[in-house]
Length: 453
Image 1 (cartoon, rainbow, N blue to C red):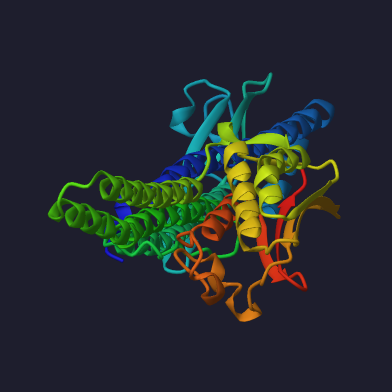
Image 2: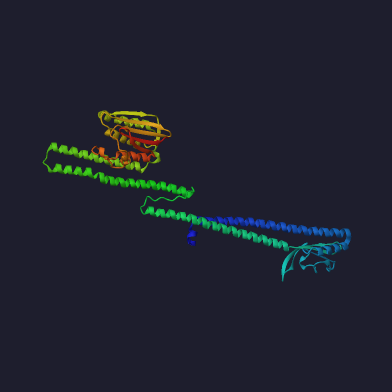
């Protein structure tokens, strides 16, 4: 991954920003720890010096100057980390482990001195914090303690805090690079899929990692949208292809019949017969056109506002009532048995689907036969069943019967364009319902199964 690409990634920039803010927070915290630690060390040094001074002054007050000199000598010999100096009123050294009174006191009680300590072949400077005290006799007492160990500890703390800050920044940047590479790989896969879709391959879908993260949820939503777009495009292509294919025959026959009528001498009887045939061909073409539009409408999907909760049993009874006269004329017994059941759906398309099933059943049931319409609950589902006692469909052809313009051999001579069951299948897909064609022994049984609302 090139640095330019890395910098342009939002995740990396966010990670750098977060790392910067986190580093500032860590720095402030480390500074607080540092100054708190130094304050504690300095307070301990000050308290130690104050205790030394109080002890020496107390010995001076109780046992005089001689005892003070002895005490200073003993402590100077025993403690290398402290300095002691007692001078007479004229400033001459009386006792102590430093030679002269420092010039930098300038009458103040506290003074910081710089001394040197040998470490190997080198002299290392170090600071001494000391307190001056004036005795009633005019003698001056100086007690101090070197801060060498304190400085070493402070340096150690500073180095530890600095490395902690460096490690924090390094881990933050490393995490940003790893996160950015992972995100960039997923974005590149999405971009590759998008280019294939833009090139015309609507079957492409975005990959999901299976983690259920925001990318997976986005991919699922986009895949759902792509599936619908593919369905719409396929429906439009099939509709246009179907119109071009199936309307060509009736229009050709219509033109031929008109041309044949025009060639002959005027004859009112033959002209009326020709007009009747033209009208029949026109009706057939319009019927095909309406069926294809209904299928395209069903496959285009439904806006959520068009969906409603409806009583499927009432819809089935109302539609069946419309076919009772046709059934009676054909000598067919039409039976309706429904149980109360509601589904979510588009009323017009569901009514058209039931009408197509009834039309198909009545059309293929011989006189004396029976067509039965049932609506019944099946667990958490609702089933709409239309069964007839006609010739039925061989089991091997049941799936093919749902395709467009498929007219099976036994019904090839009957009317129709082979679109009725295709529309029913499209309506079923639109409502997430299943459609099943089975043998009614004898006849055909079509079962639509919906989710119960």
